[in-house]
Structure formats: structure tokens, C-alpha cells
Image (cartoon, rainbow, N blue to C red; front, side, top):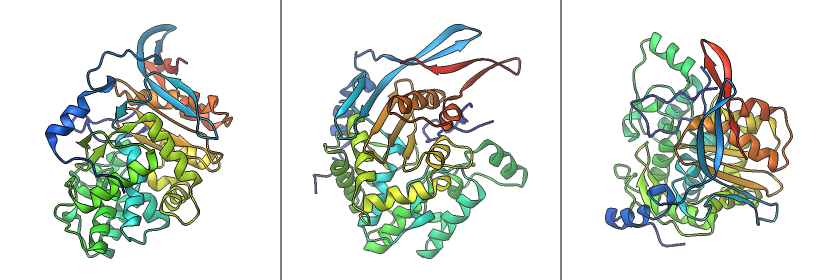
Length: 357
């Protein structure tokens, strides 16, 4: 199923839509240096082909990338490409950001906590809950600093526009995270106007949580599509973080986030999204996509995986994810749904994007 990626919002985290450590440096110059090191920022490493584009039996394109699969004991079972160099996980970092919100003292739970880790589709129930959380903390949509946007889900967007809707911050796919971050500021007595500053106490806390979960330092800080800081870790560190969340002690911030996401996946993504389908179908799985074709998944027995496709093509995520889960020992009919990415010719299916490993 093709991903909807509006041309005017290329940096947003779209997913798949059918038709105690030192804080990261806020110094842009320092970040530019660290961000430039590594194959995703101009290096010379050529990664293996993770996906092929096959039209009418002819391979017309290839997508390279890196993938890591962790065994139940946390050791690296499979590594394709460079899995120990920094990447921006984009919205795959959201579970860690949500855990930081909990550490700041915000008593979010259930759907509200799932939304704190969401790249939601902008469906009506998403927009309503974001507005509700803001009101509960005496905030308004004007306090959000994510950019105004239309619903991510194509069918929802069409209805929304037909009813006179316009771009608004609440509809933007990261608004749940931003509402939670603002709630953390209100709860902790931190300034709300500067909550996206990398040197803000909340963002420093996010950096600490990410470093602890990944078991490695944040090596670069950038600006995500929603305006929040995005912090670089390795794919191995990302898989390690997801593994740690599902294995964390019950009641800990990390486990509370994982449990809320798994119990309410439609609030993490949306009705027509891969993460929702997967968390609904496979008991105990935790999944979160990120922009630029990043995906992280953890299984309840400690297996975990993370990958990034170099060119950021979101159409590759489903096929690569389905194959990676197969290698991780998952056997469920949902993988056929997740991995089906057809190519059309004249309105008919004439090929597909398929995994190549």
C-alpha cells in the first residue's frame, strides 16, 4: 500500500497510509561535525540491498540500507550493513520521549500515554484526544509548536477538507507528543515557550532517557520535522532501547509506555497503519516507524530489530519489516498484509516492492 507523503511536508513522520548522562550539545557547530560522520551523512559505505522494485517481472530499482536483529539475550544475531554508526531514528525515538514525560511527573496513562508516543494519522479521535489533553493542563492548541498540517490519513484528509477543515497544529501527526511535552513543562514548572530548545530541561531529560535506553551516547542533535530535537543513536542502540522497554519492570516509565502503546496501537498510529496492524495481531509486540524509512520493533521474549533504508523510501518499510520479522521467528498472517506493497500499471497490480535479503 503506497505511503502518502505530501510534497510540502517531506520531513514529517508519515508511516504507511493506504489510498544521568551528559545532555546532547545544543551547539549547532558541534552537532554539524558529529552528524557529518557516518554513511548516512555523506560517507562512502555502500550498504546491502534490502528491497527491490519489481515491475512486470523486471527489477527496476533497488533500495539499500542497514538492519540489525537482536537475539532474546540481546546479542546481535544478524547485522546487514553498518549497524553501529549513528542515525536519526526520527519518530522511532518517541517511546523514549514519552518515558521522559513520565519521568517529569506527568500521570499519563492508557490512550493519553500512547498518544505521547504517536505519529498519529490525524483521525477524529486523535484530534479530539490531543485537544482534551491540552485542556486538562490549561493549554490550548496555540501552545503547540509543531507546524499546522492536514490529517495524515488520505481518506480522513479528504473528508476533513470537504467539511471545511484547514491546516492546524492539532491535526499534525506529532501533536500528541507535543501536547505531552507541554504537559510535562506545566507539571514540572518548566517554561512552555521554549520547550523545543535542545537546552530545555525536558529535552535534556529526553537525552538522558535515550542514552540510558540505548546504552550509548547521543552523538548528534538535529531538528525533526515537527520542530522537536531529534537525537542520533545507532541502529543497534535503537533495537536495544525497544528491547529494554518491553522487558522493563512493570510500573517503570519504560514499561508503562510499552504497555500503553501495545494496548492502544490505533492511538500510536491510526486505523490504516502498519504499526497498528502489527501490535494488534502479534501479542506483546512493540513497533514504531520513523520518517526516512526507519523502523524499530521488540518482541516480548527479548528479540528486537531496527533498520533504516538509506534513501528514506517509506514504500520499503512494510516489505523489509515483514521479512525481518520472519527471520525473527514471527509467523502470522499479518505479515502478508504488512509486507504487501504493490506497483500499479494502468490501475492494475503489475509488480511489487519486495524484500531482498
